[in-house]
Image (cartoon, rainbow, N blue to C red; front, side, top):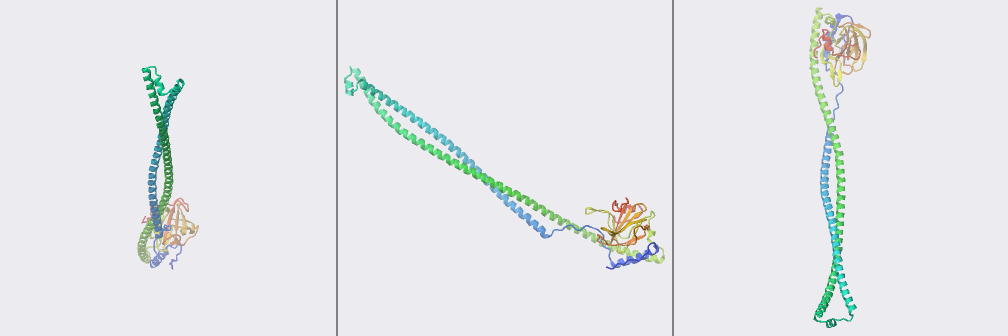
Length: 439
């Protein structure tokens, strides 16, 4: 873009206003005034695809977590059912074990009863055998009739007859009792054996059922633990997906807010630029009128009584303070490219030329020891070591370096450091009789 640069001679105050009039007229024609914020790059704006993908991942993880939660609930329910069955199987085993003990006791009792009956039979047999042995010893040929006929009298006859009846009855009873005892013995042995076998079989069956139930419970416990572990893993994945989605949504919100603020700033800057152009045109017209009448001579006439001057004319577009987490260490004054920049105070130029971020900058150490900095200049009119006075043109407004529109970035370092110790220039100048509006 073509630029208008006024031809001026340092130290000739009378031609400054005339040059300024031409410069402002050119700037109005070019319409180059614009926003003047040196801002960092915009925040990251996640794409719709990234956000949609994150939402889909979160929904998929949530669905999988829900599915596994249902599996865990079902597995725990099955574990509860198997636990009840295992408890019942254990109770059945204890009952079978008790039944076996009872059957063994019954078998022992049957054996005892059989032994008692056998002993009774043996005793009866012994009595018969003793009676027969005695009869044989006394009279081996004794018959029933002979025993009766050999009686000494009626009394002895009656006694012998009774004894013979007793022996006959006893022999028959003993033999019958012996046969009954043998049958009872066989039945008792069979019943006892059957009872023991049945009880042992029931106990074994109950033991097998208990072992199977315990195995099922153990297997189900393993299944529940595995399902819970899978769910815990998916819970972590779901949490990570939720965090990622929130991060993307937060980044999108931050970007949209940045866009909104940027649009507002650009709109305000455009309005201010239009107003500045109008003011510059009016001032140029006034300067032309003053130049023709010879009533005004140079910018130096506007120096305050304390020896300080506003560094340039224009609209304040950004004030001193924090911006996006960093310090904006000066005040920005938006003006068309080529607008004169004046030394804010008398002093010596200690540095000029390329400067990181500023494109071109001039550093002046004033007579009061403070360093004033003029950044983003388009052209420089002074060199290092030169002495300047307050209100003397030293450069022109530009748009170099990290700048979004033509403006002067003006800093004050009261400590005398070139690159640190910045203070707010507005109250600093106000205390010295110079006003900068807008902050």
